[in-house]
Image (cartoon, rainbow, N blue to C red; front, side, top):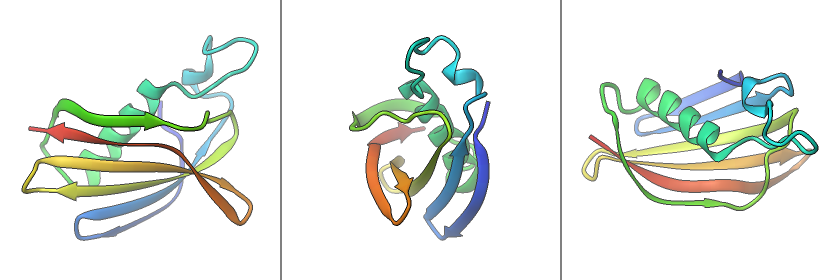
Length: 115
């Protein structure tokens, strides 16, 4: 289940999406009942979905180069997803930024190898 796409900008090997993470998304069910958080697997799923749709058509997941989860993503958050495709390395870099008014803070980032 995907978030609500508020905007999408793409320029060559880069894309930037603004996403609304509604509280009723499947991913929040049971993760965790007292304090719902967006699981890392959901974040990676979205990176793969948008990355292969916009930048690396026909590519598939191979491995994770690195990943860092820095802040929890709560229900009803707004996220900016920045994607960069490096065709020479077959590597998709990503960064999720939490949007809080005029401020942005990194929620997670990493690099995924595709084949």
